[in-house]
Image (cartoon, rainbow, N blue to C red; front, side, top):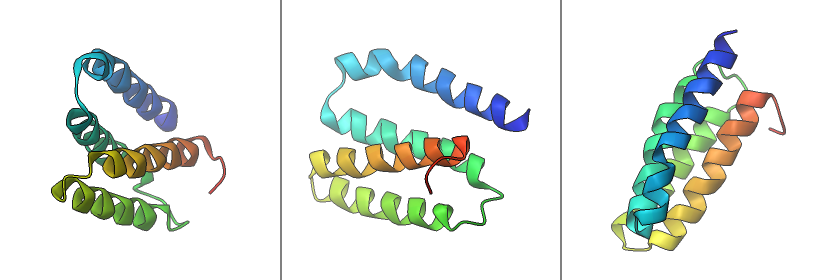
Length: 94
């Protein structure tokens, strides 16, 4: 049940942020993805597969790309990290 509630919160947050995607720029999407990852990391609190470390690495790389002004790279990295978070929550491919 705990996973279902957390997944529901995650999906709801994503849906509420949807209008921002339509009106926002790449810079906004990069930051939104970073925020989603930060919020979603709570799902990995009991992770023993090492996925949390991979997500941390991705966040670090994304922030570096963002600082360098490479928003496209930041979005690419954060999108993959979000997918990894979703797969980890579903018990999917690790």
